[in-house]
Image 1: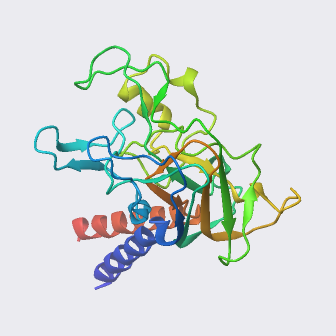
Image 2: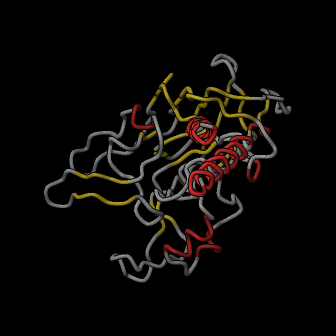
Image 3: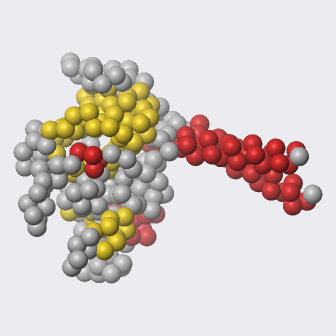
Length: 281
């Protein structure tokens, strides 16, 4: 009986932890203004203006129904999501505001100090001509936002604070999404073009160190209208502003709290203990 109880507790711990580890994703579109110059479909001319495409987790694969060029393609740093059902485009003067299912929490213990991530639709250029799986990049991107962007955050959806422009990188730029990685784990934000030059997919993934990429942001960068630092413990609302150019958004996710990783370890240890007891009984 004790073995059964131990097993049940360990299983419950893992299930609860898995829920906690899921972190927050964009759950509701609060406001969307596509702006001008947003991306359009090359074949039909239709705009990528379905704001709901930015909800939920980033894409792990692209299922293209086109009878001639379609198929199912894994999303990786060479092959970003590109369908209107996957990404929302924001043109100059436009913005997208979403509410997260779980708030982004300010925590200096988060990996690299990153509290939430924005995933776009960029990819590494293949420079060796091998598109069959052996591609190598020089570190440059295609589809990247070359204009200016701004991130604003809010705890209540009413009062928003911009992240300091000197600290907040442009979204829909580095780092391209890897669908095999962890969407809730930040990659090193210091990685740039020179780090990826000459790298293949396996080497890029090694640099990502288990992360799925994305552009990382910290709530510690929040500033008021006068540019003064603001102590914002958490944010349930994120606004993406495009000041020039255009950007494509696949998803916005909040990084889970480090304590949940400890819970996962505890749950796994309980499962292992229960298994050993059953084996020896």
